[in-house]
Image (cartoon, rainbow over the protein chains, first blue to last red):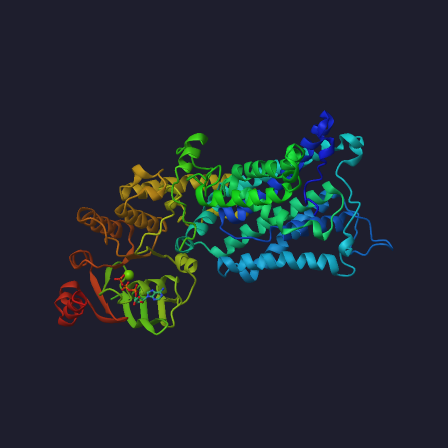
Length: 358
Length: 257
Ligand SMILES: Nc1ncnc2c1ncn2[C@@H]1O[C@H](COP(=O)(O)OP(=O)(O)OP(=O)(O)O)[C@@H](O)[C@H]1O
Ligand SMILES: [Mg+2]
Protein backbone atom coordinates (compact mmCIF):
# COMPACT_ATOMS: atom_id res chain seq x y z
CA UNK A 1 0.00 0.00 0.00
CA UNK A 2 1.59 3.28 -1.03
CA UNK A 3 1.86 5.99 1.55
CA UNK A 4 -0.14 8.84 0.13
CA UNK A 5 2.17 11.61 1.17
CA UNK A 6 5.35 9.90 2.13
CA UNK A 7 7.83 9.30 -0.61
CA UNK A 8 10.40 8.86 2.09
CA UNK A 9 13.18 6.37 1.65
CA UNK A 10 14.60 4.93 4.84
CA UNK A 11 17.72 3.55 3.11
CA UNK A 12 19.35 6.95 2.85
CA UNK A 13 18.96 7.74 6.46
CA UNK A 14 22.36 6.56 7.57
CA UNK A 15 24.00 9.50 5.84
CA UNK A 16 23.70 13.19 6.60
CA UNK A 17 22.45 13.79 3.08
CA UNK A 18 19.88 11.13 3.69
CA UNK A 19 18.78 12.77 6.91
CA UNK A 20 18.46 16.12 5.16
CA UNK A 21 16.50 14.54 2.35
CA UNK A 22 14.15 12.93 4.78
CA UNK A 23 13.65 16.10 6.79
CA UNK A 24 12.96 18.26 3.78
CA UNK A 25 10.51 15.71 2.45
CA UNK A 26 8.92 15.44 5.87
CA UNK A 27 8.43 19.18 6.25
CA UNK A 28 6.91 19.36 2.77
CA UNK A 29 4.52 16.56 3.60
CA UNK A 30 3.53 18.13 6.91
CA UNK A 31 2.94 21.47 5.20
CA UNK A 32 0.46 19.81 2.83
CA UNK A 33 -1.26 18.02 5.69
CA UNK A 34 -1.28 21.31 7.60
CA UNK A 35 -3.27 22.94 4.79
CA UNK A 36 -5.77 20.09 4.84
CA UNK A 37 -6.14 20.23 8.62
CA UNK A 38 -6.67 24.01 8.55
CA UNK A 39 -9.47 23.44 6.05
CA UNK A 40 -11.00 20.81 8.35
CA UNK A 41 -10.74 23.28 11.19
CA UNK A 42 -12.97 25.70 9.29
CA UNK A 43 -15.53 22.95 8.72
CA UNK A 44 -15.43 20.98 11.96
CA UNK A 45 -13.43 23.09 14.40
CA UNK A 46 -15.42 26.28 13.85
CA UNK A 47 -18.71 25.19 12.33
CA UNK A 48 -19.21 21.63 13.57
CA UNK A 49 -19.57 20.17 10.08
CA UNK A 50 -18.62 16.49 10.07
CA UNK A 51 -16.74 15.78 6.85
CA UNK A 52 -15.63 12.14 6.65
CA UNK A 53 -14.75 12.41 2.99
CA UNK A 54 -11.90 14.91 3.18
CA UNK A 55 -9.96 12.83 0.67
CA UNK A 56 -12.66 13.44 -1.96
CA UNK A 57 -12.01 17.19 -1.99
CA UNK A 58 -8.27 16.64 -1.93
CA UNK A 59 -8.51 14.21 -4.83
CA UNK A 60 -10.71 16.47 -6.93
CA UNK A 61 -8.20 19.28 -6.47
CA UNK A 62 -5.30 17.03 -7.45
CA UNK A 63 -6.99 15.71 -10.59
CA UNK A 64 -8.27 19.11 -11.65
CA UNK A 65 -4.83 20.63 -11.47
CA UNK A 66 -3.41 17.67 -13.39
CA UNK A 67 -6.00 18.04 -16.15
CA UNK A 68 -5.39 21.76 -16.43
CA UNK A 69 -1.60 21.61 -16.57
CA UNK A 70 -0.78 18.40 -18.48
CA UNK A 71 -0.49 18.34 -22.27
CA UNK A 72 -3.40 16.78 -24.20
CA UNK A 73 -3.74 13.01 -24.02
CA UNK A 74 -1.79 10.97 -26.58
CA UNK A 75 -2.60 7.58 -28.03
CA UNK A 76 -1.49 5.81 -24.88
CA UNK A 77 -3.63 7.70 -22.44
CA UNK A 78 -7.22 8.86 -22.25
CA UNK A 79 -8.12 11.89 -20.26
CA UNK A 80 -10.09 15.05 -20.89
CA UNK A 81 -8.74 18.61 -21.14
CA UNK A 82 -4.95 18.64 -21.02
CA UNK A 83 -4.72 22.38 -21.39
CA UNK A 84 -1.05 22.90 -20.52
CA UNK A 85 -1.90 25.89 -18.37
CA UNK A 86 0.57 27.33 -15.83
CA UNK A 87 0.79 25.44 -12.55
CA UNK A 88 -0.60 28.29 -10.47
CA UNK A 89 -3.69 28.26 -12.67
CA UNK A 90 -3.90 24.53 -11.97
CA UNK A 91 -3.76 25.25 -8.23
CA UNK A 92 -6.52 27.82 -8.53
CA UNK A 93 -8.53 25.33 -10.55
CA UNK A 94 -8.02 22.71 -7.85
CA UNK A 95 -9.34 25.11 -5.23
CA UNK A 96 -12.37 26.02 -7.34
CA UNK A 97 -13.08 22.33 -7.97
CA UNK A 98 -12.92 21.54 -4.25
CA UNK A 99 -15.29 24.42 -3.55
CA UNK A 100 -17.72 23.37 -6.26
CA UNK A 101 -17.74 19.80 -4.96
CA UNK A 102 -18.52 21.14 -1.48
CA UNK A 103 -21.38 23.18 -2.92
CA UNK A 104 -22.82 20.13 -4.69
CA UNK A 105 -22.53 17.90 -1.63
CA UNK A 106 -23.71 20.62 0.72
CA UNK A 107 -26.82 21.76 -1.15
CA UNK A 108 -28.92 18.67 -0.39
CA UNK A 109 -27.35 17.80 2.98
CA UNK A 110 -26.42 20.95 4.91
CA UNK A 111 -29.97 21.75 5.96
CA UNK A 112 -30.39 18.24 7.34
CA UNK A 113 -28.88 16.83 10.49
CA UNK A 114 -25.13 16.72 10.97
CA UNK A 115 -24.80 12.98 10.35
CA UNK A 116 -26.42 13.09 6.90
CA UNK A 117 -23.56 15.14 5.59
CA UNK A 118 -21.02 12.85 7.26
CA UNK A 119 -22.50 9.80 5.53
CA UNK A 120 -22.82 11.63 2.21
CA UNK A 121 -19.15 12.64 2.26
CA UNK A 122 -18.03 9.06 2.90
CA UNK A 123 -20.06 8.00 -0.11
CA UNK A 124 -18.71 10.77 -2.31
CA UNK A 125 -15.13 9.74 -1.61
CA UNK A 126 -15.86 6.12 -2.54
CA UNK A 127 -17.74 7.13 -5.69
CA UNK A 128 -15.03 9.48 -6.91
CA UNK A 129 -12.33 6.85 -6.47
CA UNK A 130 -14.39 4.34 -8.43
CA UNK A 131 -15.14 6.82 -11.18
CA UNK A 132 -11.50 7.86 -11.45
CA UNK A 133 -10.30 4.29 -11.75
CA UNK A 134 -12.94 2.95 -14.13
CA UNK A 135 -14.50 5.74 -16.23
CA UNK A 136 -13.32 5.79 -19.86
CA UNK A 137 -11.95 8.98 -21.33
CA UNK A 138 -11.98 10.89 -18.09
CA UNK A 139 -8.80 10.74 -16.01
CA UNK A 140 -6.86 7.80 -17.49
CA UNK A 141 -8.44 5.25 -15.13
CA UNK A 142 -6.20 3.16 -12.88
CA UNK A 143 -3.04 4.21 -14.75
CA UNK A 144 -3.41 7.63 -13.19
CA UNK A 145 -2.07 10.95 -14.37
CA UNK A 146 1.67 11.01 -14.82
CA UNK A 147 4.43 13.46 -15.52
CA UNK A 148 2.85 16.48 -13.89
CA UNK A 149 4.89 19.65 -14.30
CA UNK A 150 6.64 20.99 -11.21
CA UNK A 151 6.59 24.53 -9.93
CA UNK A 152 9.79 26.55 -10.67
CA UNK A 153 11.36 23.38 -12.04
CA UNK A 154 14.00 25.12 -14.15
CA UNK A 155 15.03 27.38 -11.29
CA UNK A 156 17.54 25.01 -9.73
CA UNK A 157 19.35 21.72 -10.33
CA UNK A 158 17.64 18.43 -9.75
CA UNK A 159 18.97 17.60 -6.31
CA UNK A 160 18.33 21.07 -4.94
CA UNK A 161 14.77 21.14 -6.20
CA UNK A 162 13.50 19.68 -2.93
CA UNK A 163 14.31 23.00 -1.24
CA UNK A 164 12.19 24.90 -3.74
CA UNK A 165 9.41 22.41 -3.20
CA UNK A 166 9.62 22.76 0.56
CA UNK A 167 9.75 26.56 0.34
CA UNK A 168 6.77 26.94 -1.96
CA UNK A 169 4.72 24.48 0.07
CA UNK A 170 5.56 26.25 3.33
CA UNK A 171 4.68 29.61 1.81
CA UNK A 172 1.36 28.19 0.66
CA UNK A 173 0.72 26.85 4.16
CA UNK A 174 1.55 30.26 5.66
CA UNK A 175 -0.80 32.05 3.26
CA UNK A 176 -3.60 29.59 3.96
CA UNK A 177 -3.01 29.97 7.69
CA UNK A 178 -3.22 33.76 7.44
CA UNK A 179 -6.40 33.57 5.36
CA UNK A 180 -8.08 31.06 7.65
CA UNK A 181 -7.09 33.01 10.72
CA UNK A 182 -8.24 36.32 9.24
CA UNK A 183 -11.69 35.00 8.42
CA UNK A 184 -12.29 32.78 11.45
CA UNK A 185 -11.02 35.14 14.15
CA UNK A 186 -13.71 37.61 13.14
CA UNK A 187 -17.42 38.29 13.56
CA UNK A 188 -17.94 35.80 10.71
CA UNK A 189 -16.12 33.14 12.69
CA UNK A 190 -18.13 34.09 15.76
CA UNK A 191 -21.32 33.22 13.89
CA UNK A 192 -19.81 29.89 12.83
CA UNK A 193 -18.90 29.06 16.40
CA UNK A 194 -22.37 30.00 17.59
CA UNK A 195 -23.88 27.67 14.98
CA UNK A 196 -21.57 24.90 16.09
CA UNK A 197 -22.36 25.25 19.79
CA UNK A 198 -26.06 26.04 19.63
CA UNK A 199 -27.86 26.44 16.35
CA UNK A 200 -31.08 27.63 18.01
CA UNK A 201 -29.16 30.52 19.60
CA UNK A 202 -27.60 31.49 16.31
CA UNK A 203 -30.99 31.46 14.60
CA UNK A 204 -32.59 33.48 17.38
CA UNK A 205 -29.72 35.95 16.93
CA UNK A 206 -30.90 36.45 13.37
CA UNK A 207 -28.28 34.42 11.54
CA UNK A 208 -29.22 32.42 8.44
CA UNK A 209 -27.45 29.34 9.69
CA UNK A 210 -27.69 27.17 6.58
CA UNK A 211 -26.05 29.86 4.48
CA UNK A 212 -23.19 30.23 6.96
CA UNK A 213 -22.65 26.47 7.10
CA UNK A 214 -22.51 26.41 3.33
CA UNK A 215 -19.92 29.18 3.27
CA UNK A 216 -17.73 27.37 5.77
CA UNK A 217 -18.12 24.05 3.97
CA UNK A 218 -17.24 25.57 0.59
CA UNK A 219 -14.25 27.47 1.98
CA UNK A 220 -12.97 24.27 3.58
CA UNK A 221 -13.57 22.28 0.41
CA UNK A 222 -11.70 24.85 -1.69
CA UNK A 223 -8.69 24.76 0.64
CA UNK A 224 -8.68 20.95 0.55
CA UNK A 225 -8.77 21.15 -3.25
CA UNK A 226 -5.81 23.51 -3.19
CA UNK A 227 -3.91 21.09 -0.94
CA UNK A 228 -4.64 18.29 -3.40
CA UNK A 229 -3.26 20.36 -6.26
CA UNK A 230 -0.11 21.20 -4.31
CA UNK A 231 0.31 17.51 -3.55
CA UNK A 232 -0.21 16.43 -7.15
CA UNK A 233 2.58 18.63 -8.48
CA UNK A 234 4.81 17.62 -5.64
CA UNK A 235 4.65 13.88 -6.32
CA UNK A 236 4.38 14.27 -10.10
CA UNK A 237 1.95 11.42 -10.66
CA UNK A 238 -1.35 10.55 -9.08
CA UNK A 239 -3.58 7.51 -9.30
CA UNK A 240 -6.92 6.64 -7.71
CA UNK A 241 -5.66 4.14 -5.18
CA UNK A 242 -3.26 6.66 -3.67
CA UNK A 243 -6.25 8.60 -2.31
CA UNK A 244 -7.20 6.22 0.45
CA UNK A 245 -9.51 7.06 3.32
CA UNK A 246 -6.76 6.16 5.75
CA UNK A 247 -4.33 8.80 4.52
CA UNK A 248 -6.67 11.34 3.07
CA UNK A 249 -9.33 11.41 5.76
CA UNK A 250 -8.41 9.47 8.86
CA UNK A 251 -4.90 10.81 9.33
CA UNK A 252 -5.94 14.48 8.94
CA UNK A 253 -8.79 13.89 11.39
CA UNK A 254 -6.32 12.51 13.89
CA UNK A 255 -4.18 15.60 13.42
CA UNK A 256 -7.08 17.94 14.08
CA UNK A 257 -8.23 16.05 17.17
CA UNK A 258 -4.74 15.94 18.62
CA UNK A 259 -3.89 19.54 17.74
CA UNK A 260 -7.11 21.05 19.01
CA UNK A 261 -10.26 21.68 16.97
CA UNK A 262 -11.17 25.35 16.88
CA UNK A 263 -7.58 26.52 17.17
CA UNK A 264 -5.71 27.25 13.94
CA UNK A 265 -2.28 26.95 15.50
CA UNK A 266 -3.44 23.71 17.04
CA UNK A 267 -4.36 22.43 13.59
CA UNK A 268 -0.84 22.96 12.29
CA UNK A 269 0.71 21.64 15.50
CA UNK A 270 -1.44 18.51 15.25
CA UNK A 271 -0.24 17.93 11.69
CA UNK A 272 3.34 18.18 12.91
CA UNK A 273 2.99 15.95 15.96
CA UNK A 274 0.89 13.20 14.40
CA UNK A 275 2.86 13.45 11.17
CA UNK A 276 6.12 13.00 13.02
CA UNK A 277 4.75 9.93 14.72
CA UNK A 278 3.30 8.48 11.53
CA UNK A 279 6.16 9.14 9.14
CA UNK A 280 8.82 8.79 11.80
CA UNK A 281 7.99 5.24 12.87
CA UNK A 282 9.51 3.64 9.78
CA UNK A 283 12.80 5.28 10.74
CA UNK A 284 13.16 3.14 13.84
CA UNK A 285 12.02 0.00 12.10
CA UNK A 286 15.50 -1.46 11.90
CA UNK A 287 16.23 -0.83 15.56
CA UNK A 288 13.23 -2.82 16.68
CA UNK A 289 13.54 -6.49 17.53
CA UNK A 290 12.72 -8.88 14.64
CA UNK A 291 9.01 -9.41 14.37
CA UNK A 292 8.08 -6.02 15.83
CA UNK A 293 10.14 -4.36 13.13
CA UNK A 294 8.22 -6.19 10.46
CA UNK A 295 4.91 -5.31 11.97
CA UNK A 296 5.67 -1.66 12.59
CA UNK A 297 3.18 -0.50 9.95
CA UNK A 298 0.42 -2.45 11.61
CA UNK A 299 1.35 -1.22 15.05
CA UNK A 300 1.44 2.42 14.10
CA UNK A 301 -2.13 2.16 12.83
CA UNK A 302 -3.11 0.58 16.10
CA UNK A 303 -1.23 3.22 18.07
CA UNK A 304 -2.77 6.09 16.17
CA UNK A 305 -6.23 4.68 16.73
CA UNK A 306 -5.43 4.52 20.41
CA UNK A 307 -4.17 8.11 20.32
CA UNK A 308 -7.49 9.29 18.91
CA UNK A 309 -9.39 7.48 21.65
CA UNK A 310 -7.14 8.90 24.36
CA UNK A 311 -7.58 12.44 23.10
CA UNK A 312 -11.32 12.18 22.62
CA UNK A 313 -11.79 10.80 26.12
CA UNK A 314 -9.25 12.72 28.15
CA UNK A 315 -8.06 15.66 26.08
CA UNK A 316 -11.09 16.56 24.00
CA UNK A 317 -9.80 20.08 23.44
CA UNK A 318 -6.53 18.82 21.96
CA UNK A 319 -3.07 20.21 22.64
CA UNK A 320 -4.12 23.81 22.05
CA UNK A 321 -7.62 24.58 23.21
CA UNK A 322 -9.67 27.26 21.51
CA UNK A 323 -9.80 30.71 23.04
CA UNK A 324 -12.97 32.16 24.60
CA UNK A 325 -12.33 35.28 22.53
CA UNK A 326 -13.26 34.77 18.89
CA UNK A 327 -12.90 38.12 17.12
CA UNK A 328 -9.37 39.40 16.62
CA UNK A 329 -10.82 42.91 16.50
CA UNK A 330 -11.35 42.69 20.25
CA UNK A 331 -8.52 43.18 22.72
CA UNK A 332 -7.02 39.93 23.92
CA UNK A 333 -7.95 40.59 27.53
CA UNK A 334 -8.55 37.08 28.72
CA UNK A 335 -5.22 35.46 28.05
CA UNK A 336 -5.38 31.71 28.40
CA UNK A 337 -3.14 30.11 30.99
CA UNK A 338 0.28 29.08 29.71
CA UNK A 339 0.49 25.86 27.74
CA UNK A 340 1.87 23.74 30.57
CA UNK A 341 -0.83 24.84 32.96
CA UNK A 342 -3.41 24.11 30.33
CA UNK A 343 -1.99 20.65 29.77
CA UNK A 344 -2.05 19.94 33.49
CA UNK A 345 -5.64 21.14 33.72
CA UNK A 346 -6.55 18.89 30.86
CA UNK A 347 -4.93 15.83 32.41
CA UNK A 348 -6.83 16.38 35.62
CA UNK A 349 -9.85 15.33 33.64
CA UNK A 350 -12.07 18.32 33.22
CA UNK A 351 -15.42 17.16 31.86
CA UNK A 352 -15.63 16.90 28.10
CA UNK A 353 -17.11 19.90 26.37
CA UNK A 354 -20.64 19.29 25.18
CA UNK A 355 -20.55 19.90 21.47
CA UNK A 356 -23.92 18.46 20.62
CA UNK A 357 -25.60 21.84 21.02
CA UNK A 358 -28.99 20.33 21.70
CA UNK B 1 -57.27 51.45 20.08
CA UNK B 2 -54.46 51.53 17.58
CA UNK B 3 -53.67 48.53 15.44
CA UNK B 4 -52.02 45.81 17.53
CA UNK B 5 -48.34 45.15 16.79
CA UNK B 6 -48.83 41.38 16.94
CA UNK B 7 -51.90 39.32 16.12
CA UNK B 8 -51.95 35.58 16.72
CA UNK B 9 -54.96 34.05 15.01
CA UNK B 10 -56.16 30.46 15.61
CA UNK B 11 -52.60 29.23 15.92
CA UNK B 12 -52.14 25.44 15.95
CA UNK B 13 -49.17 23.23 16.66
CA UNK B 14 -49.32 19.47 17.20
CA UNK B 15 -46.62 17.12 18.41
CA UNK B 16 -47.88 13.76 17.27
CA UNK B 17 -51.32 13.49 18.85
CA UNK B 18 -50.57 16.19 21.41
CA UNK B 19 -52.23 19.49 20.50
CA UNK B 20 -49.73 21.76 22.23
CA UNK B 21 -51.29 24.89 20.72
CA UNK B 22 -54.87 24.40 19.71
CA UNK B 23 -56.36 27.48 18.12
CA UNK B 24 -54.83 30.18 20.31
CA UNK B 25 -55.97 33.69 19.40
CA UNK B 26 -54.76 36.90 21.02
CA UNK B 27 -53.17 40.22 20.18
CA UNK B 28 -50.53 42.48 21.66
CA UNK B 29 -51.05 46.23 21.74
CA UNK B 30 -48.17 48.39 20.55
CA UNK B 31 -46.15 49.78 23.43
CA UNK B 32 -47.69 47.45 26.00
CA UNK B 33 -46.25 44.88 28.33
CA UNK B 34 -48.47 41.87 27.77
CA UNK B 35 -48.26 38.81 29.97
CA UNK B 36 -48.84 35.30 28.64
CA UNK B 37 -49.69 33.04 31.55
CA UNK B 38 -51.08 29.60 32.14
CA UNK B 39 -50.31 26.29 33.85
CA UNK B 40 -47.39 24.03 32.90
CA UNK B 41 -47.77 22.57 29.46
CA UNK B 42 -50.40 25.11 28.41
CA UNK B 43 -48.49 25.75 25.19
CA UNK B 44 -46.98 29.13 25.98
CA UNK B 45 -43.43 28.32 24.91
CA UNK B 46 -44.72 26.51 21.85
CA UNK B 47 -46.61 29.70 20.95
CA UNK B 48 -43.37 31.66 21.20
CA UNK B 49 -41.57 29.12 19.04
CA UNK B 50 -44.26 29.44 16.39
CA UNK B 51 -44.19 33.23 16.44
CA UNK B 52 -40.38 33.39 16.31
CA UNK B 53 -40.08 30.81 13.53
CA UNK B 54 -38.30 28.15 15.56
CA UNK B 55 -41.31 25.90 14.89
CA UNK B 56 -43.56 25.93 11.86
CA UNK B 57 -47.21 26.13 12.96
CA UNK B 58 -49.66 23.54 11.66
CA UNK B 59 -52.38 26.11 11.26
CA UNK B 60 -53.38 29.69 11.93
CA UNK B 61 -51.69 32.95 11.23
CA UNK B 62 -49.19 35.28 12.89
CA UNK B 63 -49.31 38.91 11.85
CA UNK B 64 -46.62 41.38 12.88
CA UNK B 65 -47.07 45.08 12.10
CA UNK B 66 -49.80 44.18 9.67
CA UNK B 67 -47.67 41.69 7.74
CA UNK B 68 -48.06 37.94 7.67
CA UNK B 69 -44.98 36.34 9.20
CA UNK B 70 -46.42 32.82 9.62
CA UNK B 71 -43.81 30.14 9.05
CA UNK B 72 -40.95 32.50 8.25
CA UNK B 73 -37.52 31.16 9.30
CA UNK B 74 -36.18 32.58 12.58
CA UNK B 75 -33.69 34.98 10.99
CA UNK B 76 -36.42 36.55 8.86
CA UNK B 77 -38.60 37.07 11.92
CA UNK B 78 -35.59 38.59 13.68
CA UNK B 79 -35.01 40.89 10.71
CA UNK B 80 -38.51 42.33 11.14
CA UNK B 81 -37.76 43.22 14.75
CA UNK B 82 -39.12 40.30 16.76
CA UNK B 83 -36.48 39.04 19.20
CA UNK B 84 -37.01 36.19 21.65
CA UNK B 85 -35.33 34.75 24.71
CA UNK B 86 -35.34 31.13 25.78
CA UNK B 87 -36.99 29.70 28.86
CA UNK B 88 -33.84 27.68 29.49
CA UNK B 89 -30.96 30.08 28.81
CA UNK B 90 -29.11 29.17 25.62
CA UNK B 91 -25.88 31.04 26.04
CA UNK B 92 -22.70 29.95 24.28
CA UNK B 93 -20.67 28.64 27.19
CA UNK B 94 -17.25 28.70 25.57
CA UNK B 95 -17.57 32.27 24.33
CA UNK B 96 -17.12 35.38 26.45
CA UNK B 97 -20.20 37.06 27.88
CA UNK B 98 -19.32 40.10 25.76
CA UNK B 99 -19.21 38.18 22.50
CA UNK B 100 -22.40 36.32 23.43
CA UNK B 101 -24.06 39.72 23.34
CA UNK B 102 -22.13 41.05 20.34
CA UNK B 103 -23.25 38.05 18.30
CA UNK B 104 -26.78 39.44 18.20
CA UNK B 105 -25.82 42.76 16.59
CA UNK B 106 -27.75 43.67 13.47
CA UNK B 107 -26.21 44.37 10.04
CA UNK B 108 -22.61 43.70 11.04
CA UNK B 109 -20.38 43.86 7.94
CA UNK B 110 -17.85 41.70 9.80
CA UNK B 111 -20.28 38.81 9.60
CA UNK B 112 -19.97 38.75 5.82
CA UNK B 113 -17.19 36.57 4.48
CA UNK B 114 -16.19 38.85 1.62
CA UNK B 115 -16.24 41.98 3.77
CA UNK B 116 -13.86 40.34 6.24
CA UNK B 117 -11.55 39.35 3.39
CA UNK B 118 -11.66 42.51 1.34
CA UNK B 119 -12.56 45.35 3.71
CA UNK B 120 -11.53 44.26 7.20
CA UNK B 121 -11.30 47.89 8.33
CA UNK B 122 -15.06 48.28 7.95
CA UNK B 123 -15.60 45.15 10.01
CA UNK B 124 -13.19 46.45 12.64
CA UNK B 125 -14.87 49.85 12.90
CA UNK B 126 -18.31 48.34 13.28
CA UNK B 127 -16.98 45.77 15.73
CA UNK B 128 -15.78 48.59 17.98
CA UNK B 129 -19.19 50.27 17.90
CA UNK B 130 -20.89 46.97 18.63
CA UNK B 131 -18.54 46.33 21.53
CA UNK B 132 -19.37 49.68 23.11
CA UNK B 133 -23.08 49.05 22.65
CA UNK B 134 -22.84 45.52 24.09
CA UNK B 135 -20.93 46.76 27.14
CA UNK B 136 -23.58 49.41 27.69
CA UNK B 137 -26.31 46.77 27.66
CA UNK B 138 -24.29 44.54 29.98
CA UNK B 139 -23.93 47.46 32.35
CA UNK B 140 -27.66 47.92 32.28
CA UNK B 141 -28.24 44.34 33.44
CA UNK B 142 -25.27 44.54 35.83
CA UNK B 143 -23.16 41.94 34.08
CA UNK B 144 -20.45 44.26 32.80
CA UNK B 145 -17.95 43.08 35.38
CA UNK B 146 -18.23 39.59 33.88
CA UNK B 147 -17.95 40.72 30.25
CA UNK B 148 -14.70 38.89 29.58
CA UNK B 149 -15.57 35.69 31.38
CA UNK B 150 -16.59 32.64 29.40
CA UNK B 151 -20.38 32.50 29.70
CA UNK B 152 -20.23 29.05 31.28
CA UNK B 153 -18.92 30.66 34.47
CA UNK B 154 -22.21 32.46 35.07
CA UNK B 155 -24.75 31.46 37.70
CA UNK B 156 -28.30 30.50 36.78
CA UNK B 157 -29.69 33.95 37.51
CA UNK B 158 -26.87 35.64 35.61
CA UNK B 159 -27.67 33.44 32.63
CA UNK B 160 -31.20 34.77 32.66
CA UNK B 161 -29.80 38.31 32.65
CA UNK B 162 -27.46 37.45 29.79
CA UNK B 163 -30.44 36.08 27.88
CA UNK B 164 -32.13 39.45 28.34
CA UNK B 165 -28.98 41.36 27.36
CA UNK B 166 -28.63 39.35 24.17
CA UNK B 167 -32.22 40.04 23.21
CA UNK B 168 -31.73 43.79 23.80
CA UNK B 169 -28.71 43.77 21.50
CA UNK B 170 -31.12 42.68 18.76
CA UNK B 171 -32.82 46.09 19.01
CA UNK B 172 -36.30 44.57 19.17
CA UNK B 173 -39.56 46.23 18.29
CA UNK B 174 -41.29 43.29 19.91
CA UNK B 175 -39.48 41.47 22.69
CA UNK B 176 -40.60 37.93 23.53
CA UNK B 177 -39.45 37.01 27.04
CA UNK B 178 -39.95 33.41 28.16
CA UNK B 179 -40.15 33.31 31.98
CA UNK B 180 -37.35 35.83 32.55
CA UNK B 181 -37.63 35.49 36.31
CA UNK B 182 -38.13 31.73 36.72
CA UNK B 183 -35.45 30.13 38.85
CA UNK B 184 -34.06 33.52 39.78
CA UNK B 185 -33.86 34.47 43.45
CA UNK B 186 -36.56 36.92 44.65
CA UNK B 187 -34.25 39.94 44.98
CA UNK B 188 -32.95 39.46 41.47
CA UNK B 189 -36.45 38.76 40.19
CA UNK B 190 -37.59 42.10 41.60
CA UNK B 191 -34.69 43.79 39.88
CA UNK B 192 -35.56 42.06 36.63
CA UNK B 193 -39.08 43.39 36.80
CA UNK B 194 -37.73 46.90 37.30
CA UNK B 195 -35.24 46.37 34.46
CA UNK B 196 -37.92 45.19 32.07
CA UNK B 197 -40.08 48.20 32.92
CA UNK B 198 -37.16 50.55 32.40
CA UNK B 199 -36.33 48.91 29.11
CA UNK B 200 -39.86 49.22 27.88
CA UNK B 201 -39.95 52.89 28.76
CA UNK B 202 -36.50 53.84 27.46
CA UNK B 203 -36.41 51.83 24.29
CA UNK B 204 -40.00 52.07 23.24
CA UNK B 205 -40.37 48.35 22.71
CA UNK B 206 -43.43 46.19 23.04
CA UNK B 207 -42.98 43.24 25.37
CA UNK B 208 -44.75 39.91 25.42
CA UNK B 209 -43.64 38.08 28.53
CA UNK B 210 -44.41 34.55 29.68
CA UNK B 211 -44.66 34.40 33.45
CA UNK B 212 -45.23 31.84 36.10
CA UNK B 213 -45.16 33.99 39.20
CA UNK B 214 -48.58 35.67 39.43
CA UNK B 215 -47.36 38.49 41.64
CA UNK B 216 -44.60 39.42 39.25
CA UNK B 217 -46.81 39.22 36.19
CA UNK B 218 -49.63 41.19 37.75
CA UNK B 219 -47.29 43.99 38.77
CA UNK B 220 -45.49 44.10 35.45
CA UNK B 221 -48.15 43.78 32.79
CA UNK B 222 -50.79 46.04 31.28
CA UNK B 223 -52.67 43.12 29.77
CA UNK B 224 -52.78 39.41 30.53
CA UNK B 225 -53.48 36.53 28.18
CA UNK B 226 -54.31 33.27 29.95
CA UNK B 227 -53.73 29.99 28.14
CA UNK B 228 -54.79 26.47 29.09
CA UNK B 229 -54.46 23.37 26.96
CA UNK B 230 -53.34 25.29 23.92
CA UNK B 231 -56.24 27.75 23.94
CA UNK B 232 -56.69 31.28 25.22
CA UNK B 233 -59.04 31.32 28.17
CA UNK B 234 -59.29 35.07 28.75
CA UNK B 235 -57.52 38.22 27.70
CA UNK B 236 -57.74 41.49 29.65
CA UNK B 237 -56.35 43.79 32.35
CA UNK B 238 -54.62 41.96 35.23
CA UNK B 239 -57.11 42.64 38.03
CA UNK B 240 -60.01 41.53 35.86
CA UNK B 241 -58.26 38.41 34.66
CA UNK B 242 -56.98 37.30 38.05
CA UNK B 243 -60.45 37.58 39.58
CA UNK B 244 -61.94 35.44 36.85
CA UNK B 245 -63.16 32.16 38.36
CA UNK B 246 -62.23 30.10 35.31
CA UNK B 247 -58.67 31.36 35.58
CA UNK B 248 -58.50 30.55 39.26
CA UNK B 249 -59.76 27.06 38.54
CA UNK B 250 -57.22 26.53 35.80
CA UNK B 251 -54.46 27.48 38.19
CA UNK B 252 -55.78 25.57 41.18
CA UNK B 253 -56.37 22.61 38.92
CA UNK B 254 -52.79 22.65 37.79
CA UNK B 255 -51.50 23.11 41.31
CA UNK B 256 -53.17 19.97 42.64
CA UNK B 257 -52.56 17.86 39.56
N1 LIG C 1 -40.50 19.84 20.91
C1 LIG C 1 -41.56 19.20 21.45
N2 LIG C 1 -41.84 17.93 21.10
C2 LIG C 1 -42.91 17.28 21.64
N3 LIG C 1 -43.73 17.81 22.51
C3 LIG C 1 -43.51 19.08 22.91
C4 LIG C 1 -42.40 19.83 22.40
N4 LIG C 1 -42.42 21.06 22.96
C5 LIG C 1 -43.48 21.08 23.79
N5 LIG C 1 -44.14 19.90 23.77
C6 LIG C 1 -45.36 19.58 24.50
O1 LIG C 1 -46.31 20.56 24.19
C7 LIG C 1 -47.06 20.93 25.33
C8 LIG C 1 -46.91 22.41 25.58
O2 LIG C 1 -45.60 22.68 25.98
P1 LIG C 1 -45.02 24.14 26.22
O3 LIG C 1 -43.57 24.03 26.49
O4 LIG C 1 -45.43 25.02 25.10
O5 LIG C 1 -45.79 24.56 27.54
P2 LIG C 1 -45.57 25.84 28.45
O6 LIG C 1 -46.87 26.48 28.56
O7 LIG C 1 -44.43 26.66 27.97
O8 LIG C 1 -45.21 25.14 29.83
P3 LIG C 1 -44.18 25.60 30.98
O9 LIG C 1 -44.91 26.55 31.84
O10 LIG C 1 -43.90 24.33 31.69
O11 LIG C 1 -43.00 26.19 30.34
C9 LIG C 1 -46.53 20.07 26.47
O12 LIG C 1 -47.40 18.97 26.60
C10 LIG C 1 -45.18 19.63 26.01
O13 LIG C 1 -44.87 18.38 26.52
MG1 LIG D 1 -42.58 27.16 28.68
